[in-house]
Amino acid sequence: MRQFLMRRLALMVPTFFLALTAVFVLVRVVPGDAVTLLLDSSQYSQQEADQIREQLGINESIPVQYAKFMQQVLSGDFGTSIWTGQSVMNVLLTERLPRTLELTFFASVFGVLIGIPAGILAAMRQDSLWDYVVRTIGVAGLSIPGFWLGTMVLTMPSIWWGWTIPIGYKSFGEDPTTHLQQILVPALVMSVALSAVLMRMTRSMMLEVLRQDFIRTANAKGLPGRLVIVRHALRNAMLPLVSIIGVQVAVLLAGTVIYENVFTLPGVGSYLYEGVNRRDYPVVQGVTVMLTVAVILVNFVVDISYRLIDPRVRV
Amino acid sequence: MQSEATILVAPNVRKVSGPGVWARWILRFMRQKPLGGFGLVFIVILVLTALFAPVIAPHDYSERTGAALADPSADHLMGTDKFGRDLFSRIVYGSRATVKIGLGAAALATATALVIGMTSGFIGGWYDTIVQRLVETIMSLPGIVIVLSVVAFAGGGETTTLLVLGFLAAPGMSRVIRGATIQVRDAQYIEAARAVSASTPRLILRHTLPNIVAPTVVVGTLAVGNAILAEAALSFLGFGVNPPTPSWGQELNASGRTYFQIAPHLAIFPGVAISLAVFSFNMLGDALRDVLDPRLRNT
Image 1: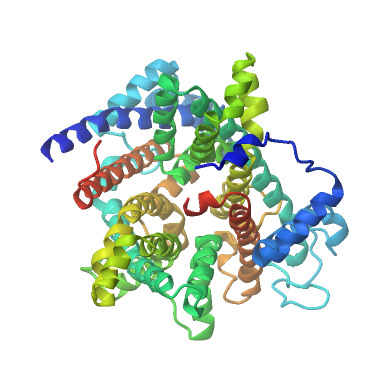
Image 2: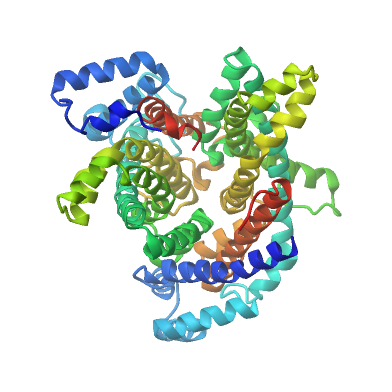
């Protein structure tokens, strides 16, 4: 196990390097630069623009910019926001990230709690009404845009019952009930797409496993149906699900840009949105790198847990 | 394991062209897969709407033709927005952005994925290893975040959206195409073509490509749905299609949100349009997969 961990950690170094290089290339290769856009959209003078360019280091050549970018990444210092003057890293770590992590955590929990049991039940009663319902929700959940679902959840209850999520973010310490509404409702909306994916996957994995010989043996030796499902079928069907959950958590993390915007939650996603809107270059860069690193870390954890569940896996 | 018979039959021997054959195939497909058939019909309607938008829309999309925030009526089928513009006409015109970016990004993604996947699968070796490392890396990036940071630097707009969505979708699709290529690569007809000294490009284009059409069509169809969803999300955030060009995601934008409680039709119709379009492509993709390539069912 220790050897496995070491090897996996060593593999992460080139992955980080490649991913961050990809971020740099994708963002810089596109024509135009942030400051030109800043000039177009606001009141900056040419001189101020040059000053900002110099401050941001985007007046340099591409290789120099790349070196600086990597240096920033390694030191974890993304500079200060053009708009507020606050340290990007500081704002991210102390204010924004905890809220986003909380939101993503609850969304994943809801997704798993809804998606997996629904998929198991659908597989156990194939072609029943329940199976049909699960399959339909499985496709619909992937087709309905999350931002629309969120908008509807904000709009319709207020028309029908006069209820809305309290406006103005409150931390748990300040006002627990307000905070829980502000986090749990968006988390539930976010979990819809995740549970749809999990329902579909669980159902098809379970159907495949249930057809195997060892399930017939377990049934034949008179094991109670519940034990056959939990101990024999589910354990084998879980393996591919773990990697799916990993990928989906990464999708959720990136999706906070949209959901935090819909529900006006001041997390990492809204920070990026504000940054893009204001052409606040250090903020955009800081958030992008942070989310990329977070996604790589999630994948790492998934690989490790995969190995824990299935000892056959080798690197 | 392929059976003896399928190996011996050379590809493209059966005549599969002509309008009659196509019509019969589509009819049988609709009977076998009613939901996929529904998707296909809706997609045809969607494309026709985009093509003939000026004929179908009763009003111009930017013209103030009624009272602001009016409820749906005979003159304004879906009501009017905050400026009194006809929502139905805006949705009809908005289908143009959906079709253009949805199909465009998916086409770009499919073409890119074919180049990456087929060369990687066919050539193999160190080339495959390097390409797959890059593919994995790009796949592990948080997609929408990358799109947004590109937009922050280059500005939004239809062309940027189409290009970025297309290129980011390609690596994931190339995985499926690479897998299919590897399965075909060792077939006897490839060996036979190689024996008569066909060049590698010829082996790839003439002998491999026609045999991986099925999985390509499936992932391509599903990619359209994803591209439509991504375009809607971007336009919703205000970075996709730029006003005054209407787009469905834009109608749900924050600037209109204050009015949704007074005029819920403004929120309902664009969302239903997006959902139906994505649902249609997803259903068609799923159905095509079942019919054309049952092996892919779990991907």
